[in-house]
Image 1 (cartoon, helix red, strand yellow):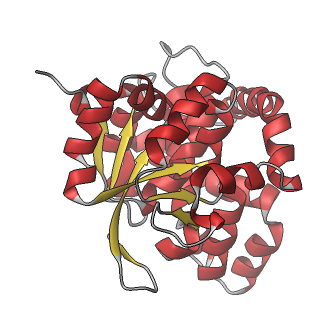
Image 2: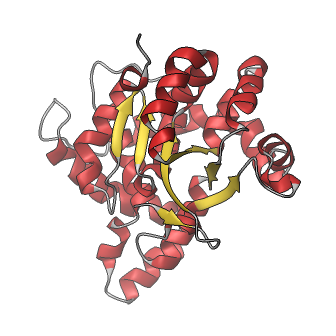
Length: 276
């Protein structure tokens, strides 16, 4: 659903995963041109997450190219998962898109807060964000270890990942995750006899479907990048289009109708690559 800002401007959001961002800026005449023609010229505005930026900032040359490419376009950055969960909990379900966005950038802005490079410099000097960035690689491994442990607690009906098992997994994992992260919300929901609300937080649904279809695929080799890709998906229910790698695109297509309010166009790099 397009968003309307307080100034009346309307935008459709296109979430770009880390691989998409990297290829767009490294290959501006191919993926870059293809993205602009497929989405930007169709009034979609690029949208990225803190997690993308943590990954890209590890590669200074790619990060410089990212700033040079995207600073000339309006764009948005979304809040990290914990903050998205907070606004969803406050809404007892799906939050407004505006509440999920952290900041907007525009080359026409009148002060430095609209400048992509300057804002991100300040953002990553923020104590909380800087801590996430410094610890993210260890967090990646901790998350993967937790996935492997939790896999043993779920009995799948089939050895092949499928939406039936996925829905059961997400149903149970939503409650387990919230008991760890927001026990007070779980307790309040039980007292209000409204336990069903625990399964209606879109960001949590999105990351758990992404987790299930990875962990229970016997051919999938988990690596550190997997956790980042899953955390990026927390913003997917709030955008109008997503450009991502092939397997994550397949996960979105299988699961999005089961995620509260998600109805995005899903594209891969192959779909946006410009060809003469």
